[in-house]
Length: 311
Image 1: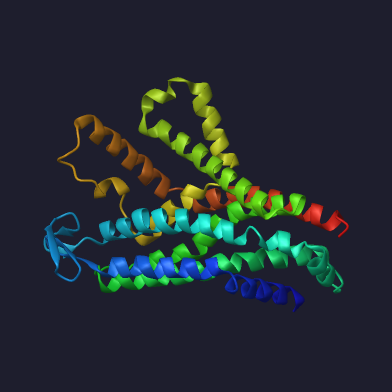
Image 2: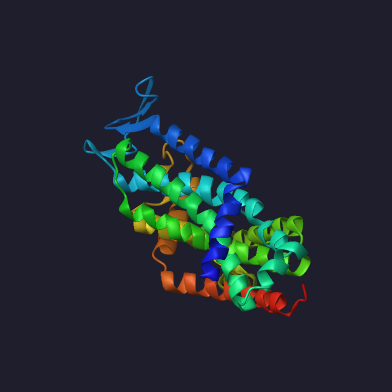
């Protein structure tokens, strides 16, 4: 019961933060923008007929292509908005949860309760994840309805984005919590966790680039080093690939216009599409399991520090 009370208390704290409502407003703005766009056979319609642009990119034989609609929804909208700007805002918003919780007045009241410290720690940790869960539910459900009603593609697999985006955030938030427990600084928690996230992304992006540019593989030592590093760090990019697969999406390269690209660019896009399809067909248990192992180690270190510190 006390464990659940910590989670509820974290939700109330989230609702009191202005950034919570800012993120909600951003979700509404994105969904409203999407609602002003529709796809009809042979054309894209903007602002309910104000502008019409001929295009067969999203239609085949008079029918709307659900795979390309799903690609647009997942690869461009979900990836570029929620998993980037949304995660950055979520990290900034939640960075102060643990430092404020560890202040003498607050932590003293909680520690006075007959509850093991590991339960207190996990209650606060999972309570903080509720912030992202609520935002994910709101954003994904809004965009799911818009894609169905306006874009003519109902994508039930897209709803998997809710738990998977929360999982993505947890890979990064565990670092924020570790920093908060050791340094009790909101600024340090936000800056270091954002920096570590950039490192995660850099390792994954570089490792994938070896598949886009085969000439890079000539240096096997560097190639193997990045492939090994990729499996050590949490695989945040894989989350978007998993959502794309579950939504029935194609590859992002399919949304690029072919006529304006040079032959060398087309070859790169084809290799990128093959690599992207390979990532979409990954073993989800392997990628999620290895990432959760990293998260568990970081959380255990933070929990050990929390349990041994005299507050």
